Length: 228
Image (cartoon, rainbow, N blue to C red; front, top):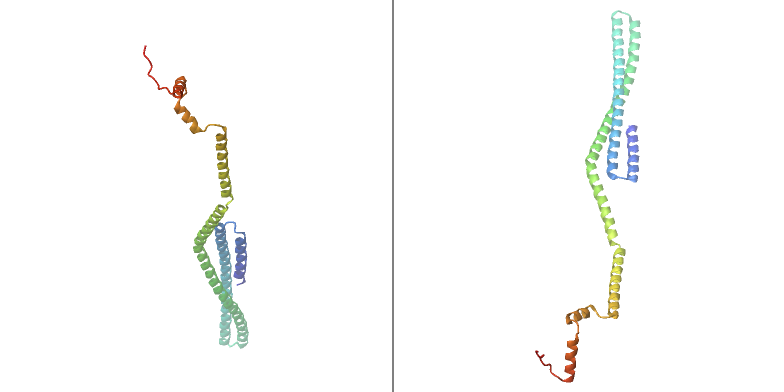
C-alpha cells in the first residue's frame, strides 16, 4: 500500500519539475507518459511479489493443516489400539499443528486482502495511464496552438511599434524637402526646363529676322525679292 503512495509522490514531484522547466511541452508530455509506464511496471512487479508471498503462505497453511490432520488420524489409531497415552500425545501435536495452521491462515487472509487491494490500485493506475495516453495528443495539439498564438502575438506587437513608421515618415518629409530645394536652385540659376524647350522650338534668330524687325520699325512693308 505504501509503495503506491511513494510512486504517486515521486511521480507528482517529477511532473511538477517538468512543468516548471517546460522547455518543450510536447517532449515533456512524452516523458511524463514514459514515467507513468515505468511506475506502472514497478507497481506491477510489487503486486507480483505480493502474490508470490500469498502463494507461500498458502503452502505453509496447507502444510500445517495437513500435519494437524495427520496427528488427528494418529490419535485415532492410538485410541483404536487402546493406547490412550499415545493418543493424548498425538492430540497435543494435533492441537499445536492446528494453532500453527490458524496463524498461517490469519496471515494468508491479510495477505489475500492486501493483494486484492494492490490489484485494484494497479488497475486504477493502468486506467489513468490509458486516459493520459488518450489525452496526450490533444494536449500536444493545444501546446502547439498556444505556442503559435504566442508567436502571432509577438509579431503583432512588433507591428504595433510605430518607430519604424515614424522613421519612414521623416524620410519621406526629407525627400520632399530635398526636391523643393533642388527646384529652388534651378529657378534661381536661370531658364527653366520649359523655357529651354520653347527656345528650341523657336529656332535660332538670324539676320533676316533682324531685317524684318528694322523694316517694321521704319513703317515699310516687306516687298518681294526681285528676280535677276
